[in-house]
Length: 162
Image (cartoon, helix red, strand yellow):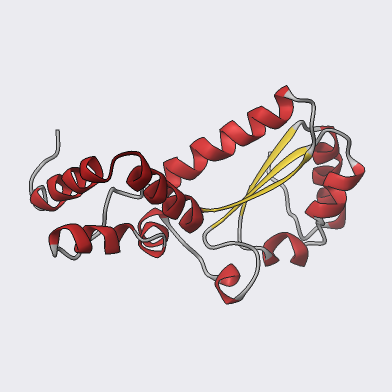
């Protein structure tokens, strides 16, 4: 089945489906749904118990809200490449698209928490923000271990990791 969100009847069908959902996971730039006339805030407010998770590259406000993003570049924005450089003097990416799975795990955990507590609401996650938080938590947990991991990552450039 396909849906044309530019069609009023198809859009109405999607909104009706959303109103019956427990969880909605949206991954788009903030303007995407607004352009289509889908108001996440209103749907959450009007639909009891709806847990709506918004995932963006760089948040929902400011200039960066309109930027596209992928796991590698959002991890760079979150500070992982700077951490690699600071620890090793090596310029490069850390992890392969690491911000994608990290954000997915946080999104699933937060949606699950809301459902388990019978709560509705909107959770807004940015992949660059999650990468930054993961780096901050890694530093707080074990700074020395983080540096060792970064050194290992830098030493692995051009070699298979297994």
